Structure formats: structure tokens, C-alpha cells
Image 1 (spheres, rainbow, N blue to C red):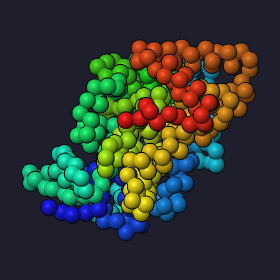
Image 2: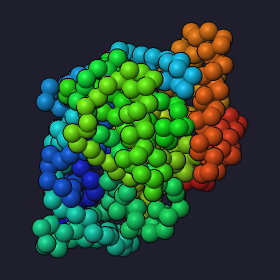
Image 3: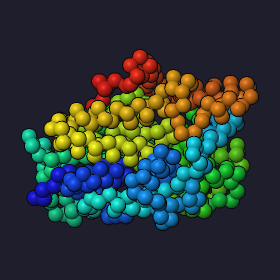
Length: 402
């Protein structure tokens, strides 16, 4: 049995950030990754300015090999059924277009942690002063004895399933898939990430350029037909935007846990097991999870260091420290913050006010119709309650956290 201070499950950006804080504090840290590194990661790769700053400050300048082409993104363009479009430039200029297979590996390597790839997390047993982590590598059973465990293993987190077996049944699941097309003609500006507020297309629909191809992506509740949804989007793009594409060359998809950030229903673990990144529920409004993964991952590492220094329960410390990231992320979905504040890294309000009165009315109508698409999940009342909590208390209640 291997004895270490911390085991991190998943070689993600959240894991790299957590590991960097832990190794800088002198804690022996092992990262377990079930795939061989560098491994493929399904992701748009469009990083926010805040995430870019974190990488620069903690890991240094990004090498060219960790970027797609185009290597950068200027901002986001929102498209509406009324055919009004709004382009929002990121504050601070362009941001990197990460190739997650190599950017994650680069960050993991620079974290200072020991990495055990092709090693699958199987389960854990928590004792009073340590945790036994069971794993498997190429058919061989392995065990690690650690003071703390961090689950940084994505939406379908096996670590969450090991401590809260019932949790996956308590939240709605979505499928997010994207197909890659050769380009015949694409008027969509390749400097932007394009998003459609259109309930007829799906719960989350996007497109952007990558490595000489065009990605067409769609998200929808689990159980719907991916191919049918995708064909509908491709047809719409051609009819409404003049986008003509070759048949797709490849496709990919994954399950996503949309929802926790909207309704302040995060899961942060229990005992000496911490959950972070998208596994915990962090997701920005354009479904960019990298920046909040980096920051929440760093906080999980800092919480372990602080808890050991102060001899305090790590959950108590983590939940106090993570409240700042909850505010920043959930503010992006908070209707009061969107209307009267500036929670995003691009100026939605200024872009909206730059439209004519008629266009503004159309945009507000289209956004409302899009929001209604989520009515079946009964999130509306929970979003309003979270917004009122934030208004009255200056923060979001921890009572909803798991």
C-alpha cells in the first residue's frame, strides 16, 4: 500500500490546480488518471480571461502545442430566433483556444504531483485518520493510504458515486455532443464562439472553428436522439446563416450535469473527501467550466493545507473558502446580477443597450422563451430563491450544498 498525503482522482485542470497548491506546500500528492496521458478531453477549449490569467500566474506562458487553430478567441456571439445577433468581446482581449489533450497534460506535468495514469479509481474507505483508496491498473489491484482525497474527475464523478451513491439519481442529466465538419462556406466569424438561444435547436447549441473544420454542437436532455438534433441544427445554420458544411468527419459526446450552478446545489464532499471542478457543479454561463475548475481546484488544495495548519476539519475550511467561487459562478446565472450587475467576462448589458428598442424587445422575448425550455426541471423557483438569498445576505446559502 502506498502512503501519501493526498490522492487526486482525475488528471484535469482542476486536479492540476489543486496539486500545484499541495506540492507547493510540501505535501506528497498522487494523481490517478484512468486513461493513458496525454488523454483526449471533450471540450470546446475556449478559455475565459480569468482562466487564462490563472494559467499564466500559476503555470507560466502556454506553449504553442497546447493550442488549437485558431489559437485564440475574441469573445462570444449570441444568436436569437428573431435573427438578432450580439457579439461580446472578452474583457482584456483575446483568450487561448486550448487543445485539452495537451493543455491538461502540460498543466499536470507542471503541478509537481506524481501522476499514475492508466489507473482507475475503484472506491474508497474512510477511517478516522486516513482514507484507503482502491484502484486498478491493467488488471492489478492497487491501494493508496491518504490523509485526504480530492475528486476532480468530471461530471460523472466516480468519487461522488462512492460517497453519495444516490446523488446521480437526484439531478437531471444532459447529453452534449459535437460533430466536426469540413467547411464549404461559413459566414460565422471564426474569431468568436457562437451560441444560439433557440429552444427549437436544443438546450445548448453552439458552433466555432477548429483546425480547419467547423464544430456543430448540441446539448439536450438525456434520452433524446443526438443525430436528429444535430441534423436539425445543421439545417438551421444553412437556412438562417448561410453555413454550408461537408458531412461530419467525426463526432464525440458526453454526459453533463447542468444545473448545480444555476440553483446553488453544489456537492463538495464529506469528511476528508473533497469534490471540486465540474464534478462539484461549477459551470459558467456559456458552459465554460475551465476557469472555475482551475480556481475551485486551487481552493480545494488550499483548504487541505489550511486545515492541516490550523488543525480544523477540512470540510469546514473548504466550504468557507469555496463560497467566493460559488458567488462568482452562480452570479452568472442570477437574473438580478445579470440585469443590474456585471457578473460575466464580457459586457452583455452594453451589447444589449447597443441594439435598437425593437431589437432589445425581441432579444428579451427570445431569452424568455429559451428559459421556458427548462421549466420541466423546476429550476425557476430555485433560481429566484437563490437570487433573493444573494440580495439579502450577500452570499448564497450553504444549506443547499451537499
